[in-house]
Length: 240
Image (cartoon, rainbow, N blue to C red):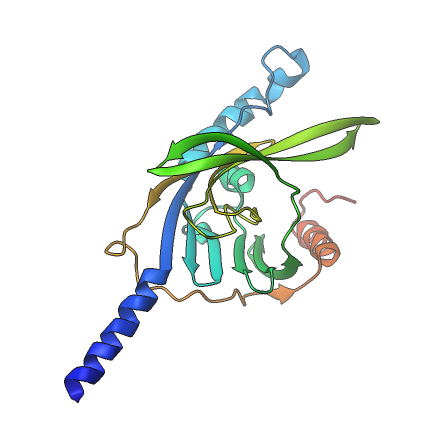
């Protein structure tokens, strides 16, 4: 009887273990921030080159288990507030519940944590038959467009995702998702996130996906106000 119970327990354990997955991502700049032919942009070239070099420091994880996932930057507390790569690549953590389609986002600003609750964005993906292989998985191309008014003119920004239908998760880097497969590579107007490794069960730690709880729960508007308040307290520029 004890042996039977042990077998059932082990079977349950391995069944749960097989449901979990961890992917490692890196980030790089798309280069769109700097136009070498633009004389007005040259003064910021040194800043951008330093920022791009610091992106090499960053490593992200996307952990998945059942209907839940968590995106986070490794050791984000170890980077200073002045770390340009972290500011560019992003240091927010995103917990996603696929059943409710809700994100719980943890933001860190000037050593203060905040929690925001948001719905999954509707990126209105346009799907293409174009494919490429990433880490052994056949991935399909999807493109989302966003139009913004800049200097009185409409400008279209594109987000390009490569998703793997064989990996049945509707998520990807940060809060990008909504496709019929896990996004292994994503390029927006500034950055490119790309998966470098899919950890095997032997390398995957025994993790529990916990919802972020550190910090004050705020709306987007309240968070912007808190940013101004904290920046003003420390003598930094504000949006006011």
